[in-house]
Figure 1 (tube, one colour):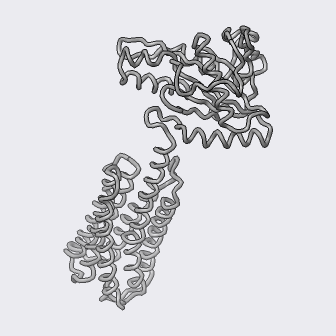
Figure 2 (cartoon, one colour):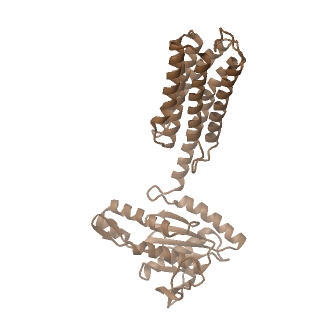
Figure 3 (cartoon, helix red, strand yellow):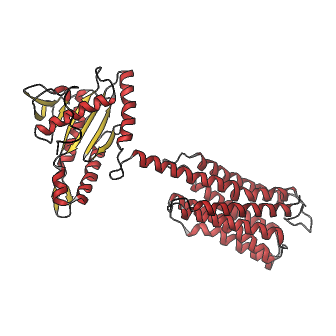
Length: 433
């Protein structure tokens, strides 16, 4: 099979591939379609260029048109990747297209020079391919293997393009040399090279889109759509892992369950839209005041949970108090309305009697009920509850790096009317506003 036939096969394969891409793009989300459309256009331009290269005589107008189509196809691939990652397009990326077409035009029409055309096209192709590889460089949170494979593909193709030019420059070429004939072994390799991006690259790009969708579904399944915090599913998964590690390794682990005080009144007075904004504001305060390693989750409604890893009881109380103060000290503002927001919290620290993470979570939940019953805007640790007594919650912070306050200062005097234990009644689904 000569190189002309190979170009025909490549053109047919690429057109079929572009058709399949067009069909499946309808099933992809609208946010990915612009990138898919650019890739599809790039693939079609390369296919048309291959067909013209195979069927038409290498006259100047054909040389100009074919090389223009190849360059625009590569430019389309770059735009597809830029749109995929949300990068702002720059006019500078069109420079290699203009440069390549201008040089091919001049050294085809004005002064026929095959090697100068090859040099110009090589520079333009390598430029665009390296730009595509740069766009595919390591992205935060994007660990998809398909991205790495496509990046390597562009780098390898840039290397092949440069090597192809080197062969043309160092090998003696006959006067009647034609890139579509069998006068050089490079001509047999070039059609396969031209098929890499339109065929293998397209498949890899589709896998990138598929991986993006998978990761988005994982986010939807694991995070609260309103606040961006971990949702209950994510909370339970992380909590079980942290509970198991604390049990096996003997490290500290605590759970703080927090609830916005009088949230129903905010909804009733200002409307549910303002209530949603208040939840977002409170969630942000929780994230800002929690430690980097702690998981902050919205478990439902106006209730939040913070998993406090590797803390003993005093440190867990100090951390929860810091969160409470962070929410209280900066009121939420909606237009001219200033709406004070406070939280009540129950804290439970892991001990040998806890059978599971759910057991620990229930203890914290019951302590939260005590905080609500005893006046709100306070922290109640389940293990500090003393029947029939008033037990101050103290923070001895001289040796703690969790928060910095004078040692021995009372956080709040919490009236606790009964013990908060494993047999206390649960109030998770009501009774605390």
